[in-house]
Length: 116
Length: 112
Image 1: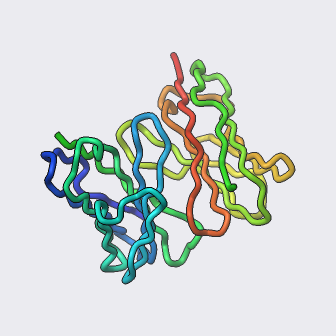
Image 2: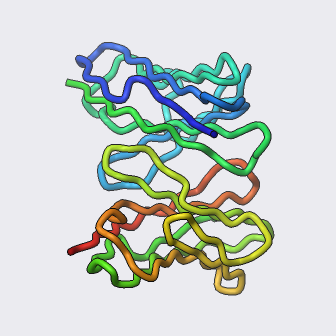
């Protein structure tokens, strides 16, 4: 149980285009989902927290107009990188918190984004 | 400020040797502690967790960690490592069941 999927697992896009990444909780309801960014050989940096049905809360320094987050249902959150640039290339990981277990987060497998 | 410190960025060890990955956190009344493992190009997998109760927690693959409140530590240990244990290990803490705060990670490299 407690499986989180991400799609796509990797994506290459041209500079200036937008990319959408999906995060799904497959066997539980996730009232809260988190989006992280990870640079090579570094730790995870929390970008934003999204709660189902409400606006996401962004961490300091993260541009909310560039990284659009939507959490439309209890099993799906999306991250859209708008007008992507090469510096947005990174590994993006989502996690979800089970409504019944508020202290645990379950992580997706990550999405490798490369902007050319 | 709330923080997690993993002092060792890399730990090289030979197969079948014991290993300890260190983790310290900033003190708080209530804390939940986690160890995650990350294999190359993959997401994080929960290795073990401390929520309450026994201060010694174990994983199914031989790792264990001990919550030491007086030393604010949650070190990860394994008595005999395998090649397959080569990965990045992250210690994480949540203070109020909200955000997870991650350490900088420790790269465990097991040599034959």
